[in-house]
Amino acid sequence: MPTIDKTNGTGIPLSGTTKDYTISNTIVMSAIAGLLTGDVIQALNVKAGTLVRKVLVKINTALTGTSGSVTVGDGADADGFDTAVDLKGAAGTISQTQLGLTEATPNTLIDAFAAGKVYTAADTIDLTLTSDTVTAYGTVTVIALCTDLN
Image (cartoon, rainbow, N blue to C red):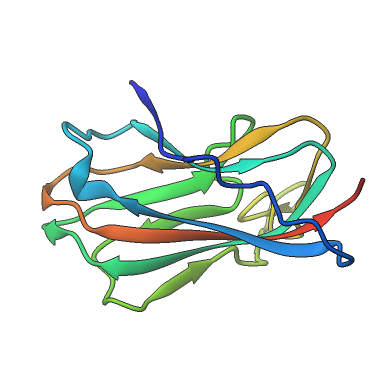
């Protein structure tokens, strides 16, 4: 499956005295031709030495069709931040990393990065399509709440 880079240089915070910052990028998925299940859209650049505390996905325009969703993760874990964002959600709907457990031996977090993730090397926050019964994709904004650890 192809990987589509839509980061557009996002992920570089403005210089200042605070170590906390937000990065965001609006992805017009309807403008990307031929999207299919398994395709990866690189949404945000994350620099080395960053703690990503939470990733949010805001639906700006819902997709049309029977169903369509994405997982939110990175190169190490495709659904580390969110296992299922329903792209048919109403405009303004915000999905976020959930702190929940899957009971087993041992228990595991439903979203592996629910407590945040430290990036020791540069990476991207990615959206991976998990279904494609879609007439037309919509538009989403991906937002990461970060702390600079450098």
